[in-house]
Length: 404
Image (cartoon, rainbow, N blue to C red; front, side, top):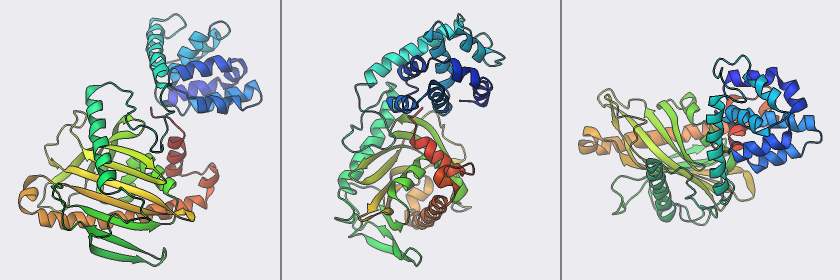
């Protein structure tokens, strides 16, 4: 929801809280796919009508770019007793000056949300969407019928299935994925009293065309918090990771899949810069949180004239809680890919070394994030106070929302 829409709600909040038909508005927003039944239960848990309407508006503000338009449609469909609220919301609007109870734009908008409502009836037969779901929820609940989105989902899901079949196929504490891999670097973290290990797969599997690297370290915050941080703060990565020039979430594929565009900083002045566009899929399996990405091509990110496309076969992460202490976790990463250009053909060994160094830097990044999360747990962020940091705000907002 943009700032102008929020201002219109805030300006008229006393009248909205006093006069809104809570149940009618909430059910209309559920039918439009803006609210879900968890939101409805939060609203219904309040005692008075004023409290219910306050809760409804609080949730509405966090429901993404289409929430305000859906709210207007809900007021329109609520009928007698709500027309004055609709007129109030449209007053002094620079964006939608002709939107009224009988306006053409509102009729079109109503048709749009009636379509969403019909889609919602189909989706109601599926498991409730959530940010992190267990493995018993099907991973193929793709609501969007766009062919390219379906292709991107299949790419991400295939990479994920290969990952959990070949590498992350057992619980970490039953059998370490990298147990028989070559250790190429080891660092001891005295404060965490744990070793960080960087691995190279040797011998390389015959069906893997690119060198496989692995990494393992222990962290002092919970697996779920780290995983939520990974998903919700992806675009803030550049603030903590000096190896990245840019990280952008391009689109959502479904509630457990997205597309990101990553531009690393130049490795060397003699090597052309790289970029990668990945479709990612994630799932909770048993008690571990797992994510895997693989390269795709999309017209939303046209090829750059100044950078090679790095082909990523695997870019995977797993966070596993430590038995007996859910406030600690083991973090593992697995990567492989083709840098492209002349580096790929002639200097793969050099690039492997550079990639190995990047993985070491990834360890330090995870430790930096771990320190930040633990600082936040001891600060105003823990109670979501007024001084909550941007990272934690994103985590809390993101984890309580359905994908927009």
